[in-house]
Structures are given as C-alpha cells and as structure tokens.
Length: 340
Image 1: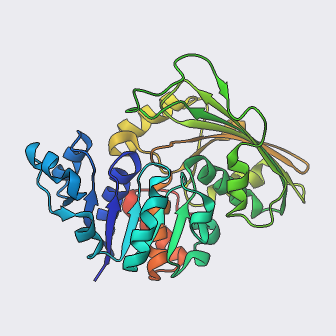
Image 2: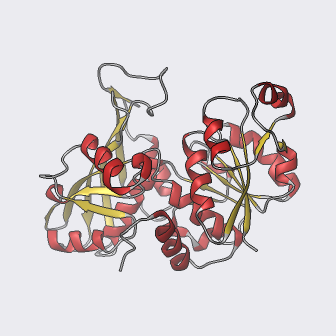
C-alpha cells in the first residue's frame, strides 16, 4: 500500500504538489483541504480529488454546488503524511493538530525554521529527515541557491557565497500585489533572509551574503551568484558539475535569454502549464577564474519546490533511499536531468 497523503491548502503550491503526488506509484492523495469555494477548487474537482473543509465552511461549499467529502479532522484521521501548503504562519497554527493525531507533516518555507527539526532539501539532507515527524521544505529561492552551491561544492569546498536575488513581485494570480513600477531592495540592509535559510540546510557554510530585489514581474526569479572555492576550477569543471546534478538544467542564452522566453518555451515544449522544476542556468553566464565562480540562473517560484515536497514525503515515511526517491520523482514529473 502506498503512502496516504492529505494536502492542507490548494493554492499555488498545494495544487501542484497534489497533482505531483497523484503521479507517484507509491503515494495516494486521500484528499485536499480548501477553506473557500473559489475558482481554484474547481481544478481539484476536475482532477477527482476529494474535498475536505473546515466545519464552518461546509455550507458555503454546498451552496456553491461543490461536493464535500468531510471535515479537516475526517481527512487527517485517514492519512500518513500531511503536506501543509497554507499561507505563511498558518502551518504553525496547524501543527498542534497534526501532533495530537500523530501525523507526520511537510511544511513550506514561509514557516519559521524553528517549527521543525529539519529544514529540507532533497540533495543535501534527505537522510537527516528520514523517519522524522516533520520537515520544512525551504523556499523557492533558497532551494535554488542550495542546489547550485551543492553542485559546485562537488568540485571543492565552498569558502564564500555572494548572491543577488531578483524576485518576482507576485505570482500570476496575485492581482492585489506589486510593485507595479520600480524595484524594491528588501530588506535594505543585507543579508536577506535567504542567507540564514541556506545555513539551516548546508551546515558549516558561514560566509554567505544575499541581497534581495523585488521586481515588477510575475514569471520567475533570477539569481546572480558568486562563489569562492578552496581550489581552482575551470568553466568546463563547473559546467560538468552542474550537468551532473539532478534538477539543474543548462540552456544557451542566445536561444533563451529571458525568463519570459523560458516560461513560454516550457509551456510549448516541456510541460502542461509551463512549470519548471529545475534551476535553469544560462551557460553563457558561467564564469570561472582561479578560485572564483560566477553564474546566473532562473527559478520558477511556483514549481521548483514541488519535487522537494515529494521527496520529503518519502523521507518522513522512511520508504525509499535518497537516490531512489530523487530518480522516481524526476521520472514521474518528467525532469530530464537525473544526474550522473
């Protein structure tokens, strides 16, 4: 029997994780939780997911003609693992309920690092999360940073990291957010929270500094990173290390030079909906001289953490090994670069 999973929250991340779980041969989506009968719940109905709601919301759903399977508590009584994809801060309020029922939980990067014993990244600390009660999958930007650092660290010990993160201003559906015009340096004093977040996963990396700029775009983030290594490396070394790392894709900047082109290409040729689970590194941007490496890459904020959530479920459940889980997740989600 597969791992029985419930998904708390069916928004930007929850709906993608639910779909990804349904593709896994060793997992089952028992149901998803929504608090409001908005347009997003229609995709859950279309995909055949059972809808669970808070008791106070049940009448609204029924009046909207949306079938309700039961309450939140009904769902949780029938799952092995819950993926909490609720807005930041809500997961912390939900955790006592999961604990009281003895349910393992996967939280998202908007929650505090103190919420769980392990902040999770598939490549770095899958084994550390094995059979734990809960993990926190770090944010989209932190996931992107960690993958690149991990790849380059296979060449030599990382001594220093400097990164500038150009963040999308809002997701496509977030019509009430901005900025509409201008760039926002947030926070104005470095580091941004991403540097500390990386340290919760990559232990021993002390010298990391990140800046974060919010830009008026909805498509993806872009990072520019400078890494100082203990040993000298060549550009060819770096390219090979990136190509050998799961969930990193290298593209030619003369063909795909912008986040707009990347997303459009993904929609046309890669996956329905244009989701990009990989770090997309521009090969043209890779520079290496002596101990220094510099490169630029894109992070699709809506999708990059989806495979990490799938691996986190298996790690908590104590089923597959790191290598087995990453390979299976990549295969089912159509991630071509499986590393090695």
